[in-house]
Length: 188
Image 1 (cartoon, helix red, strand yellow):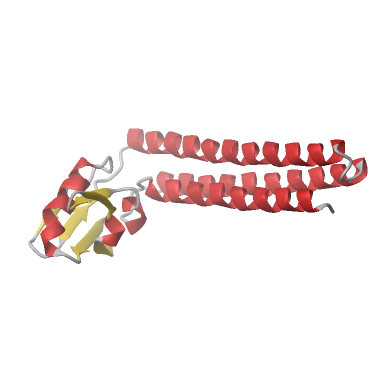
Image 2 (spheres, one colour):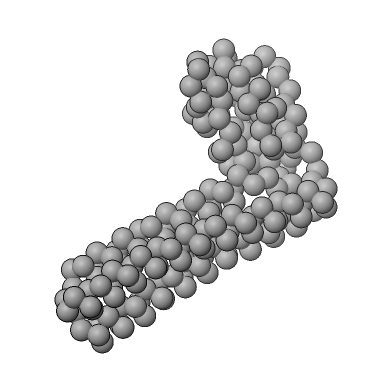
């Protein structure tokens, strides 16, 4: 196998893995009926004038299926964390006891569940598009190597099949992540 093709395939797999990871993070940030710290992965707090991920400012404790306790490391950030939670699109209503912030997640309505499922599908489709774009770039590199005479047509075809298998595997992984999220959302 030519070095150019080997590099293209390795780079393609790396980028597909990143797309899958982004899809997992996006799915984790979509709210389900249960309280979990991953819901807050996209929430940023204005901490001393700098947008800071909430995970860096507090610890999270799941008390029961719908209650989460957020304990700031720096008590002076309490008001900013509370404001960021209110402003987020999670529908959370934080209550502050001076030491920690308690969030009781409201039960999801059927309509809201459907909206979240649509959002999950959109994020899943974005990940698949990203994976297909990676495949297209890698295929272009393989085609160029064949055209330039670096590798034979048979080897080029073999590598394209390998690339297709790789693409199929990552698209299926995104589908599994999506299916899992959908199951979570439909749980009542």
